Amino acid sequence: MKKNLRYYLSLNYPIHVERMKDGMYCASISLVRGCKGYATDIAQAVEELQGVKESLFELMMEQGKTIPEPTVHLEIPVREFERLPSRKRLGRFVKTAV
Image (cartoon, rainbow, N blue to C red; front, top):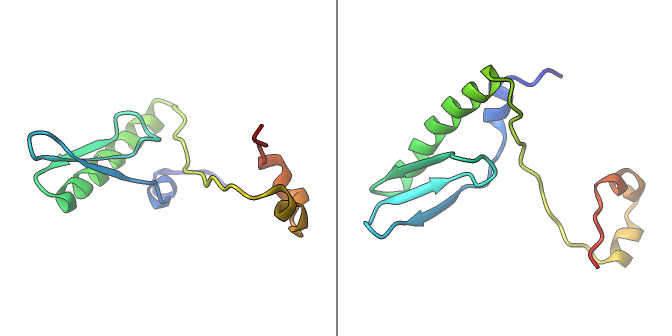
C-alpha cells in the first residue's frame, strides 16, 4: 500500500497540551519534531495543530522525508505474553526489559 498524505492524516497521533507561562496553550505531537499549534484555548490550539500537521506532513513528503507513525507501547508480564496465541507473530516487536 502506497502511503499518501491522507493515510498519515488518518493516523491517531498522541497530542500533548500544556499551558504556557503567558496563558497561551501549546498543543504538540512529540513524535513529529516542530509540530506545534498555539492558541488562547485548548480547542483552538488543537485545531491549529491539525493545520500545522497537514502542512508539515505535506512538506516532508515533498522532500522525501520519513513521516513517523504512532506506535503503542505495552508492558505485559512475560508469563502473560507466553500464553498469547499470537506471540510468535508479535515476537518481532518485543523488547524485553532488563
